[in-house]
Length: 140
Image (cartoon, rainbow, N blue to C red; front, side, top):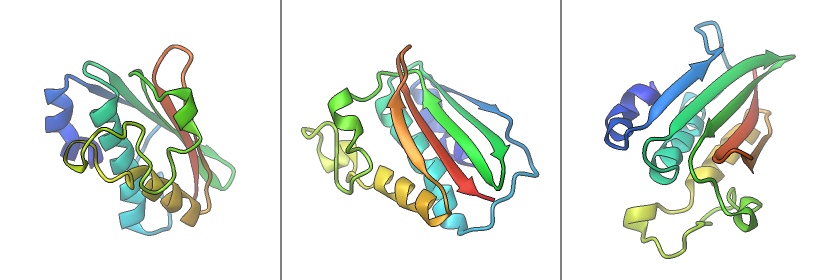
């Protein structure tokens, strides 16, 4: 659903999306709106900041009583000094961007709180080959 809704922006930035191990029987008991916001905010951030001609990859697997997801892109990543704070409310890596251009700094805070509310954990890391990875779990 998120990929379909984001297709115009993805096409405009010449980005591709790959999914791995996602299937119809993956079900989560939870708040649809908050679960949707996890994937929508991560996708919107990748579109806004990863750079043109990048690839977004989302993979999922079942681990015990949780779903384990890896959302990554092969873009520019986040400067290391900002990684520890990107889930804070109103925190923006590029302070010079206006709200119109760069959002409010709430997207990743919403992601984190939505994951936590659904019994999961989340972390972010730069990839050695370039790009940014979010690894998170959500209770089934």
